[in-house]
Amino acid sequence: MNSEKVLLRTMMRQRLKTSTATERETASTTLRELARSLPRWEGARVIGLFYPLPQEPDLLDLLSEKSKRFVFPCVNETGLAWREASDTSDFESRISIGNNTLLEPRATEDVELCEVDLLFVPGMAFTTKGERLGRGGGYYDRALSLLRANAESIGVCFQFQLVDVIPMEPHDLRVGRVLYPEILN
Image (spheres, rainbow, N blue to C red):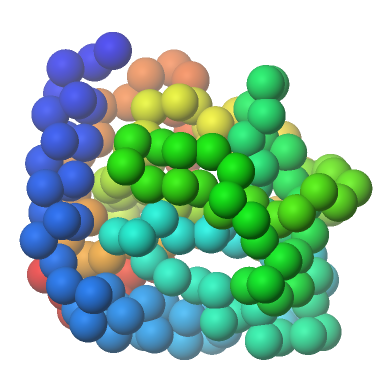
């Protein structure tokens, strides 16, 4: 693994730990407003979200948009499967990542990623050019490669997670754009 990536992940984990719950919620509220203002939001029928780990941006209030279908990642032996959820009560604890438990939709039929119009992607760090540093498993790189050509991928982060350079490797894929609030430096 690239030592620059390891160092950047370590630095971002530390910075995420020092942010407060109030700061993260304020920034998450702004991110949800930014998401709803995207040109693609209005026409999107199927939207890919993620259930946030404790220090990640929280977009779950977007589930209140009942005219849209929302799908969430579920880790399986080959990568990520995508399952529909319409409310936070649709989730259960599935696997542990470090000290955190990942919540996933209860067992339903998988939704093919090619059905997704708009995919919101978490990350440890992003550049304004859409370069992304994930947690190191390559799950979202594989997912991004499965999106149809006219689907839009959006990285979601706090402003301090924006960096000038991310060491990219051949398997690393970019997101189409990055949303971040102008707060929580």
